[in-house]
Length: 456
Image 1: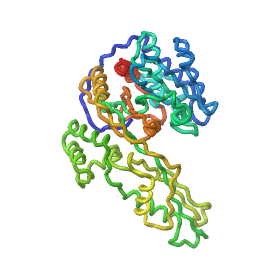
Image 2: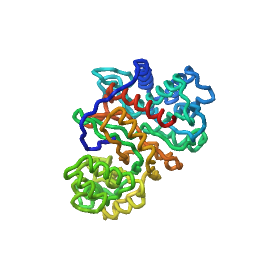
Image 3: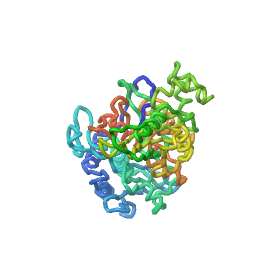
């Protein structure tokens, strides 16, 4: 989830949850957090089996509960909630794995659930075990209530979204397409809302995402003794190249989703920023509006492809001229950009034949998923029932999620979340990760209402 940059008056949230439902959702989140699912030493299969046990106990047919994967530690859970078959199934997607978390970096054990001062702490509390818990708890609640959906509802909790060699979403689509062949996918790992200074910001629905693509910048040199410095230094060449990247801006490149974002937000923000948003929708290359919006990191990332150096390595001895200097430049491409186009632009900007620029692990773009009007209206109605006055805004995710694999497979995918986070205290992937208890329970209730409305 990312900062939207607009402020709205706080709205009152009216919840209809029973204490029992809150307790179940909290218990699921606790269980998931206390199972280490990092790539290095964690066990995704253990988490998948723990959730599968809950579905078996709730009376789901064994044939509709599957834990499967290409590696013993990288299991994926797929559960099918049978409906009448009046419509094609819907998939609800979350990921069980989490980023690494070292005990010495945290105030407390990252793999022990902690409830303190109105917050739930633990690795994955925000990304994405809160989403997993909401889906599991609501599938169980709907089953207990005897809800009969008009179509099959499929839950997939997968591995290696954050890191690792066994991405569960891609593996399921490649080897078990029949399990996840649906009309569209709802991804809990994107979209959602945020607080700013105690007030609510518009709830976002993600319908596109940027492409993760890194490039290796490398300069080789014969080196020599450090007592005899020369201008032809590998580190100088690399430093100049990275400076050129700092000064270079890719052209504005809007798509239907980002254009809709700026159009909707312009009316909400107002003032100069709102006028600039409206201007770039109508004329994307206007220097003034583009320059002003580009000063805001989130809006800059929504406008264009971005590249930034993230890693450096050079030299082999402190008393020797460097024979090799390497920098990693991480780029986030808008959906219709290409790695080749970006490589060409970087090469032109650097303009130094001694700097080689090569792509690392080329990624394939996932197309944007235009939001159908009926789905947008349903999202708006669900949001209004909980947070009156808070608008729903389509966004392009500036990061990356597993949604791209489904979009590449021809399955429209939408990042939808009912969790709100503080824009000034986003701890996803960071130390002491947490989610407020109120936000968690609101998000669980949001999913309950949303799932019922989708399959009524």
